Amino acid sequence: MTGSYTRSTSFTITDARYVGGKIGADLRILHNYFGKPPLSSIDDYVEEVALLLRDGYLDTVDYGFRDVGGNAWKLRLRYRATLGGQLTDGRPGNLPDSTDLADCSFYSYLTYSSAFLNLTSSEKADVKKALPVNRTTADAPSALAGTSTTGHGYARNGAGVARDAYVAI
Image (cartoon, rainbow, N blue to C red; front, side):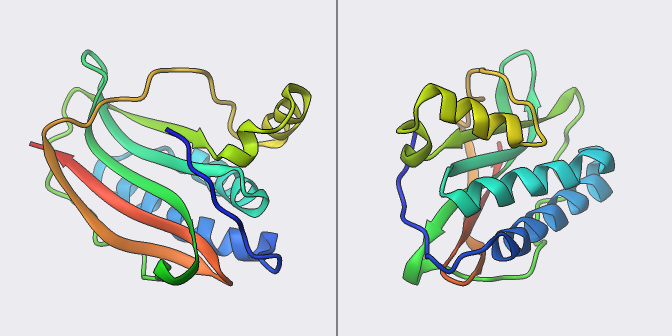
């Protein structure tokens, strides 16, 4: 799934890193609860989000734990790039902490915006080459039976992300 949005002309890399830093705080909370993601990878995830947000190339990015055998999310935090009046800038946290994640692995899945998809193949390659996270093509994990909590987000200067937390039943 892809999305489209127009970012504010005054949205800078500093603004994008502010938003990314709040996602990083959520990832550190996941690490404290569940031991993953590795602390050494969180700064790379933050910078990836910041670069893609700044340029308007992020649609969604998911972080969480999946059942590898069934490629299904057990716990997922989804961040969707947003603009305008629906933005909120909340405090990181308020994440599910009682989920049983035995036999699950940490995973991240990213989708690009239509602005990115409209780039030439060489422009796309240049953008991906500049990112600190090397992603490969894969099927998105499913999220079939569970509960989702919305209404949380991080924003600055007219752009940001809306977060939802999904927990499988």
